[in-house]
Length: 339
Image 1 (spheres, helix red, strand yellow):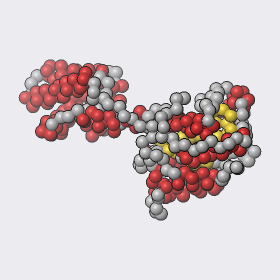
Image 2 (cartoon, helix red, strand yellow; image 1 turned 60 degrees about the vertical axis):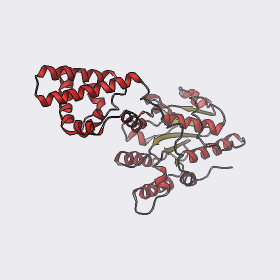
Image 3 (cartoon, helix red, strand yellow; image 1 turned 90 degrees about the vertical axis):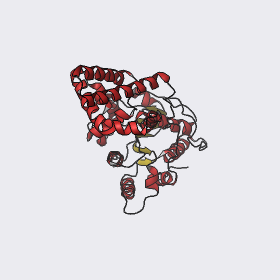
């Protein structure tokens, strides 16, 4: 069976949006079963209440300073302390925990903390005292932030799709001569070596040249073609997400010469794909979908796919290149494949 046109793999993707609760992106850790952590959270609350109360009594500066230093010590030394109502309030002040923790100068850090405490005392402390405190807050805040710790989940998923398509672990190489010597292999690009690889393939990679040398996520060789894959996981709408999606559209708008083995593949997974699959005319997802389809028509050797579309492509390419029976299609909802 020959390969389908790129628009067909796009349509396959639209017909099979991403699954919910994939193992690659699931986070289900419990942080409120650690009693020492809960003790420090309770201690932080006590110190804040004491500071607010003493502030109202207008006592001397030394008392405030001792409490502030104690609060700072907990904030800087207790893991997961950012998942508290006090630190969550910082976002209302246009302040972030990561930047606070990065400030090395004690005087400046304590000054910032004092200002945050004063605002918290005025705006939140009595409200929270009246409503009551619960450690559910820590778990809920932790759950809400879990997507930020996804790390290499997208790369693990890409390589799992490759494993599923081939039925075996594909050799991962680091040297260009090894890449050219093997009929099928993969390479995780590095800044310097990726440029050399593209030159050896007589490819321009104009996308990277126009974006401060940005390199893709994965390169896979299937005998006579080379897939250069840029992957993004988008699960919600918004300005930042639109920028990422526009970047993927731009990525497949650069096509190499006809005799080049290089194909650019935009891989998008995440819940946002459901919006494009069900997009109605006039909406932003509809316009994005139209832009993707236009880019694919103008660049027929590039691809825009999700999990199902990429799996179909890899399996058909493998069958075509190596004359082997197409592997069975399995849904990637099993445990992660270690890479």
